Length: 311
Image (cartoon, one colour):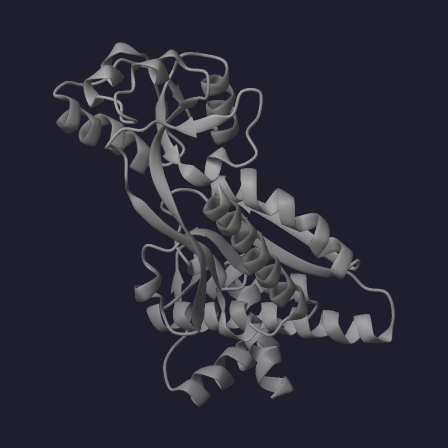
């Protein structure tokens, strides 16, 4: 088993360096030793892993599949090593998270403090989950958990699991003291009233651009007066708090906004529902830091659901 892992890690180094010579220098072994490692893996798996090109060596299609598994195994090996080192003495565990804008701005800031209290030796690496991102980073171990929309969770590849915590609802929103609220009739605002105010488009997720450009146009009969396009969710919310702009955003973004609060506009538009939660590798499910983070998420969203029911 250890010999096989050694050969697989050598394959990873060869692919990363693009040549046996550079990989040999990096690993401190001879090129013939690397060639023997590749030959042993190919003999065991029954297919070629590398092919030569003018630029050096590149993985075959099968080699890329093997490399993906190697990267995943490498990350799991690293996690197990962290656990063993922690048992023997102080050592830092690392949790790598990619999170969508709503999770970065609203959800995770409320949870990372308690997570660190529960696991003082934990280092968290938080990166942006960009629109259109795939699960390849999780499969290969570069990322441990993705936090965001779960629209495609039913199509996840093997070895990946998901956990849903809530459903966000898109709403037309404005600041609580916006003049349009004075125009509500019987608790509902006429949709055409939205055309009398400037709009802000949150462009960090193309879905919201499409909702305003198409759904709003279809519902209102003409395109709204779009004055501001903003890629940052934080900045978008600040602009909405300090102007007469209105927008379509998920209701989860409104949590904890103050002075003035951002609130849903009572109008029949912008009602898309999006499940949200985490995607992670199966073998991560019992890792203590991830178990704690999921428990914190359950408590966080449960508390907000209870507050909404009371309100």
